[in-house]
Amino acid sequence: MKRRDFLKGASMLSIGALATGCTRPTKEGTANITRAICEKDMGLQIYTLGHELYAGDLSANLKRIADLGIKNLELAGYDPADRKIGGIARDEFKKMAEDAGLRIISSHVNPPTIFSGAAGRENRTGRDGYFSGEMKNDIVESFKQIADDHADLGIEYLIQPMMPKEGINNTNDVKTFCDTLNATGEEIKKHGVTFGYHNHNMEFCKVNENSSERFMGDILTRPYVEGEQIIDIMMRETNPDFVKFEMDTYWTIMGQNDPVAMLTKYADRIQLLHVKDFVVLGESGALNFQNIFNKFFENGNQYYFIEIEDIDSGKQFERLEKSAAWLAQQDYVK
Ligand code: MG
Image (cartoon, rainbow, N blue to C red):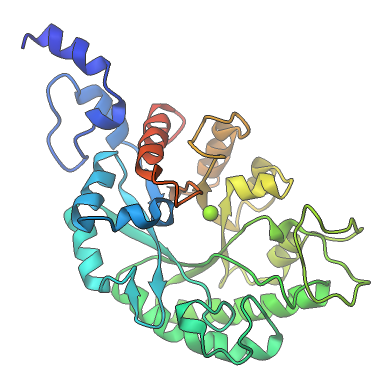
């Protein structure tokens, strides 16, 4: 094939298909595009891929991720009960990721005492997503093993991705919850890992001081009250030495807040970013990713992770390929 014909053919392929992985030599004619991808520090929250990540050969699937230009991973699926990641031994998972050219930066783990996932079946209440201040010591205790396991993996961040909706409704409840977050972060720091909290939209609910109701409910159906947003109390009541934040762009707008305003107001607290749109990145036009990324980097941050919901769609790899290709083309993304 003549060089001119090759380039013509190449231009019709998607960037994702052109990328040959940042750890391997680039093909002639694709070097510029591949370089544009490889110069970026793209990350992926593996929750995005759901069962597609483990379908067939995990090792091959991790290489497929790297071939999209992704370098960093944030885990989901560590189970405190078996101490594995998605059923795979931790060191085995790490080796496969590293062999693919991927670095594991962060990991999402919910306190098993609060959320009765596989590890929480024996929690004292038997209720899922329930919190009370009395659970603090058990929660901190449960994080010791979790932090040890993540320190062994060489992971920088351990992120709590949720808060319980039951047991938190007024300012005092939020303060009690923050007291537990502080104690958790202090313990995790002893293991050489940084603790953080990841938002959904529930943290943008306003506290309801005059209700005896112990269930937060949903922000969209919750009765309007004059009060402070839970997230603002959390930022004030958590200790910056022990608790960092990972902002999810999609859930912030679903909480009726502006991601750029959050990054401006909490410049010294938000260290990680979930880059999330409604489905494929850049398609909805609902999020100004240029302003979000500019502020995020201006604040001195580095790590961001693509995330896409609807994990059972069967189209997650396809959506990830489109999202990574779109991100690779944005010159404001580092
Ligand atoms: Mg997220």
